[in-house]
Length: 189
Image 1 (cartoon, rainbow, N blue to C red):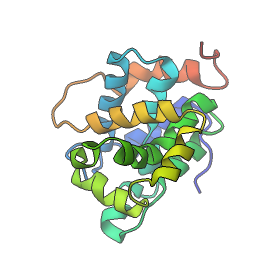
Image 2 (tube, rainbow, N blue to C red):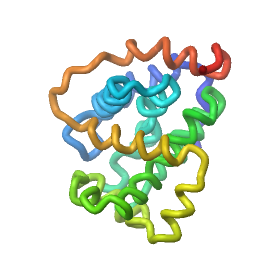
Image 3 (cartoon, one colour):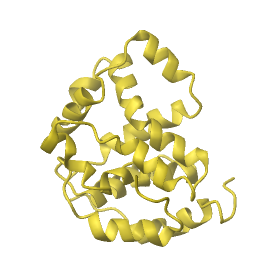
């Protein structure tokens, strides 16, 4: 496991080092994060959700986790790794949706008849490695988790953020949100 990140600059460093890499989609890691966050912004989400959406796949930047499914045929648990490295920096309102965005995909496959067919090839591959769609009991248990609703919304933004050549604000645009959301910054309202 990678060490816990201590400040927002370390997040920028991760994106500078690994954000322009592919991860099985038609966009880079950075483009995906920025697009998903922009959709959350446009939807009027609160700051915590925008930051969670921006950073939901930060675990993909660790140890080439974004390519493990395709290359090795296993799930890298990027949602767990990402939340873990951010755990010393952000509150649970950000960490939980990140940690739950994969279960949210499995949930949506269970409850939304068209959702499974809308997934990209890379998302379908990872879904198969993550356990596939939830059964009824798993779906009910998921809904009882704190931040389940936020994780489902995050997942929807995640799915939207895969458009080649979509122009959105850069990472620096989100620095004030990340800094104010950080545990050592002002509390989120």
